[in-house]
Image 1 (cartoon, one colour):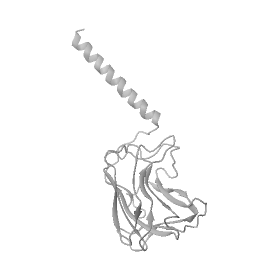
Image 2 (tube, rainbow, N blue to C red; image 1 turned 90 degrees about the horizontal axis):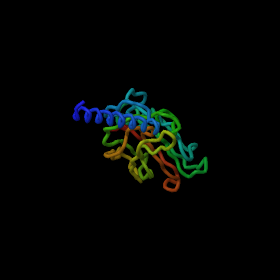
Image 3 (cartoon, rainbow, N blue to C red; image 1 turned 135 degrees about the horizontal axis):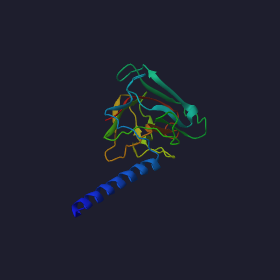
Image 4 (cartoon, one colour; image 1 turned 180 degrees about the vertical axis):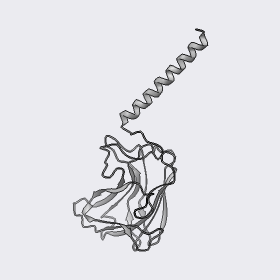
Length: 208
């Protein structure tokens, strides 16, 4: 064998080893094999839409203080419905705060494989308003769930004080690792900021 051919064989062998190690690394992290999702990729556009992904299953804090309506017809921004969230601020569980994660699959707190590969998304946009204005939301978030099979990254904005008209907000995702997102959307708010509770509306939550 000539020297050039031996060098070529060595190169092919190193590439094969590198690919195998990368695959093993993915298995160690627990991320399932999945295709990249096509943008735009919706969390919610309207009730029962085939475009919807993730489920609002991850209720946190004083979960007994939350009422969730996915088919609200009041002052819809677009489509046939929007999301309505009523927070009573009664501190039913004694936490003093609430939050909801939209998860894939439902109720996934990083204890099992799931999620979507959202690589290529540059931002998550969503529309939100309060019933009267002045409602204070501590954080809107993408990702951040830990566990054995965690979200691959996270990004957030907040605090935000709502108005009583629809406003579009953006969570910047440029440079984030979106290869495994199980917590597609999240919000959190506190009793201290909202002693009388609030009513909030959400619509058109979309990765772009």
